View 1 (cartoon, rainbow, N blue to C red):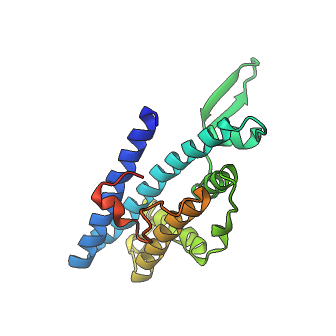
View 2: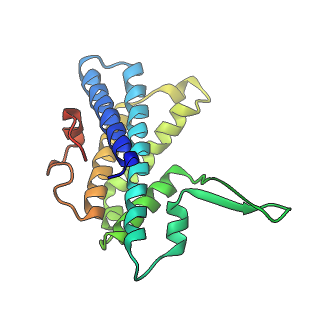
View 3: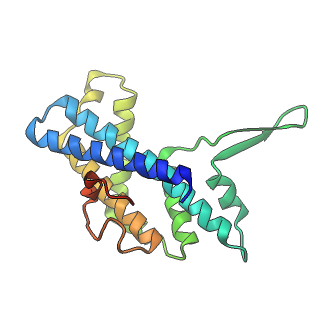
Length: 193
């Protein structure tokens, strides 16, 4: 494990603990602030996990010497290139829609680990996509109504978290991922991934 892996692992543990704490506070003090914070914290955790899984998929892809998929490696590199008028190349961070890049990372991870991405047929994948619209609404509100997080939105978030953790476990073909639990709250205990 390199230094970045440790840092991202720690980041995921911190954000997972934050998410779990928000969940606890929602049960004891359910209000609009904690509902919004719960959704936003969950997506911070997803973003951190995406980065960590992107690095894992990239590392596995680079170890394979018999067959490289250059297109996958380029996108896993998270860099976009363009040729300027003077013939030089300018690099910048890849900008891809969250859903698309999450699907790409998890599909790439599955492919590189030699598993099938069957987790996309799970009904919670659709719920993951739906809760992303809730996050977008909260992040870019146009009206006061955009700031409301309903009970259904909270259920979508819980299903999205469950789907994401199962997708990683399935992609990595690692039944011990998450210490064999269906609930990612193992993070709250500070256990490493």
